[in-house]
Image (cartoon, rainbow, N blue to C red; front, side, top):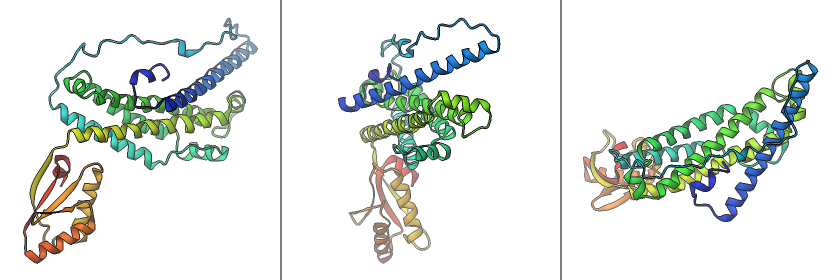
Amino acid sequence: ILDRYPYYNLRESEQKKDKFNNASLGVLDFLNRSILDLLKELCTTAETNGLNVSIDIENQIEFTEIESNTRLPRNVAEDQVKDEEEHVIEICEKIKHISRLMNDSKISQLQNRNELKLAVLKKYNEKRARMHKNLIHNIQSDFDTHIKNTRIEARYQDLKILRGYVSMPLHLLEISLWLAHFYERHEDEIRPGENRTRISMIVNKDVLLDKIINFGFYYSQYFINEGNILAGEILKCFTKIVKVELPVPKPLGFHARPSTLISIIGRQFEDLELSVIVDGEKFNAKSVMSLLQVGGIIADKGYQTIIFEGDKRVINDL
């Protein structure tokens, strides 16, 4: 993460960059110390059982030294892909979906030890980390298949930044997944056994819980939410406003049930407007009250059809 973060050129202030880098360095230090302590215990146990271990355990390796920064030019294969705009729209919508899904989890930074423990056991666990990671990995895969190194990516520079906002939570959720896995499988309050107690004495459980929640899950949500904001801005560049004439619901017109359904469909596209037009006047089709008002006008005048106006995606769903 520390190696790739600068190359994503995200829209982050220097203060936020410094805060995230410092948090990342803290996690790296914890991981390095924990791995080395586990290695020392492994070597001690091996020697106790008569195994000869010839490893210099005092030589602390900083894993960040192993880097690969060689990158091909972005225009090596600038392919023309069919329906590029449709793929951009689809990817942006998927980002907005996973952002809503993660926000529904209400991830927040916690300080209380018991709250951290309950959060990992009941909510922010290995299963949730894997689910979110897989969804985001699918988005990244779609982006690389349909958008990366295409003319549309070259034309809209924000698309390159958007990929960074997808990649960051992917890496962070990988960390959360493996740390949560370690806690659930090997810490002393999850599984019985002699080794669980020994491991819990080597790896600081409180710090481990803190890194799972306050680093991995928290920052993965932060970056996907920033990606959600950028995705909304990008979608506005691809908005296609259309009008369509649709039949009035039978037999009762725009009463509560169809009005609610139309409102739900419209509100799924939170950044896009949806209007209904009656006698040249526009009404907000995302509002149930507005639709009920429209229903009264339609009933009075006996209209059998009605005009909806909005982005093509919303109209298609209607």
